[in-house]
Length: 149
Image 1: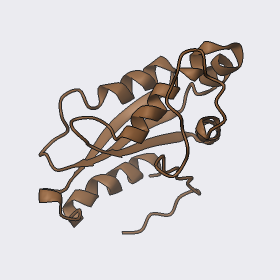
Image 2: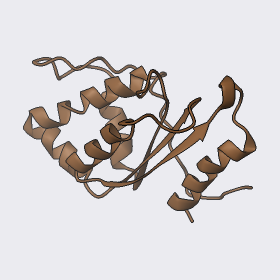
Image 3: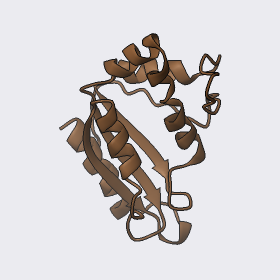
């Protein structure tokens, strides 16, 4: 199945530099603001992460922690308010039958905090760490069809 849709920007958080959040040191010279700028240019935001120890991957957690930068000063708050109205989705993979309890909440609650529209979580299960099967990938296809029908 092929899906044709508008150009998509993918940011691999493992390939950019985002320093951990530190109170009093929020003017870091890293890639955090450029990632947020990409989010601001997008109507739909898809957070994609494997499940690691019942939670999001470390680089995603660091990024979420840094969202605090958008609350500290007037410029950050202006940028944070500009995220409002964007649709937020979650695509995750793991080996358990379903997502762990509480896994979705950080994504949904963060979307709500920034007045973004929480849409849905999609989960692709890998059995015993094997590559995703066609059936598992149907969830990713289902997400794509929801975003760009």
